[in-house]
Image (cartoon, rainbow over all chains, first blue to last red; front, top):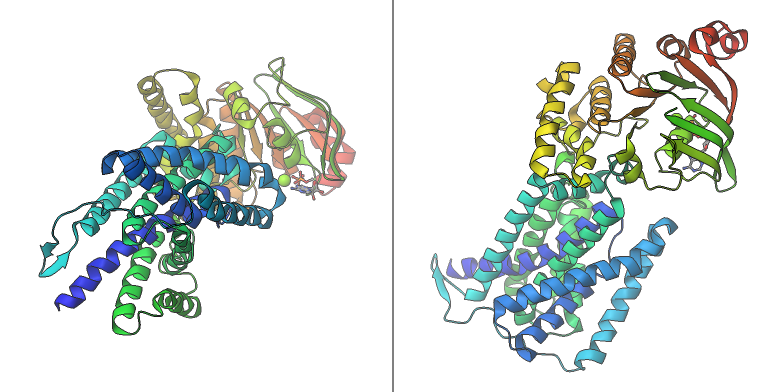
Length: 290
Length: 243
Ligand SMILES: Nc1ncnc2c1ncn2[C@@H]1O[C@H](COP(=O)(O)OP(=O)(O)O)[C@@H](O)[C@H]1O
Ligand SMILES: [Mg+2]
């Protein structure tokens, strides 16, 4: 029983990291109509920038997270201006290829700035594991869950209650009609890229202490894609639930079946969904799409 | 003169959708633009609202050229475009759809509270015009019937407080009694001081409701005049009113 809970909690923590990456993909997809293949590399870049603030600049954890988020917000706008905006009328294939280009550039580019050796990222929260329903949970995993849930709550309020949030949702539903309402569509797409890249930064900082900081973090992209499909592509709640499903499944499968194939389990789940329920968990609920 | 199109042409790649169109709308009138499917009516409205750039010619609104402005600035100048197919935001409630129609007023440098209070009042005025929308105000856009969606699309356009309302085939796909209601609302809107440019395939109803009319054929204006006269003109009767 304890083992099961233990696995569940660590699966959930991993799942939240996937969920944040998946959420960024879904938000950019609804707003700009583009599947962003650079999202995993942006997560990786977030981890590098986070480790720089934390260990090179010596800032406290919270400040490092905030500074990385701000820097990555600007990176998101820059990314949009380079990889999306000039190509937006050329069709989605061209834009997808350009995001793949950016991801290759980033994955190799970090070597130039940070060197080839993986960097160590200390735990976000130190201290002994906490007892939770008889399972021992590292404080870091609790921090991941609490911060992610707070962020999702903030995001829900923001999209529902603020004018900026409503304008971004309008653009995500229909760009032309949003323009006819007097909404500056390119600016809203800028904001969406900025916010999605901030989510990537946070995912990167969460992932960093679980692994080392290296381009391997960019491989989170495939887990995030699996999450979006499992949850229902394009759905915000789907990205979150999908991320949790993938995180929990792979943690259990790695423990009980084989940890050598850890990465394969997410794909098994993905293929299972594509066969049995291709629209994903939330695929049918139109109103939840944005 | 409120709106003036001069020698306006527009292309999609090599396809010419509009050629040398001249058209005006004055304050306080309903002008209808009729024509068959593919004549270029929607393109003309999209050029006015800035979604499509003209390849030649000019668009002037209240004596200012607007043909190079982005859509959001054109809305702020006082033109609201109710697009073909209603284009209701499906994941917004009726109330959210209406509010988003007035969102351009927030970017004009006025205090937010003042604008929100004003929008609340306008929302109530629109609910008076369309009582059905008030009953459904919490429902999602996708769940509405075609007639309700059309009312909502018009209401959303009015939330922009336009001087000129562009309507693209508001009667399309509606039951006859709803078509009548839509045209009577268009006249109410005119009487309340908003000029209307009404694009229609339902030529008979449009000519009855309008003050002046233009007929568009493969991108060119072929007939224009007072709507009542066009209703009886032979060439219009044969081609658009079934003889
Ligand atoms: N986005 C587009 N790309 C290419 N051609 C288009 C596009 N939209 C319309 N057209 C063409 O332009 C012409 C006018 O279309 P449209 O303005 O939609 O006419 P209407 O509204 O009168 O039915 C048609 O020949 C149509 O095929
Ligand atoms: Mg049309």
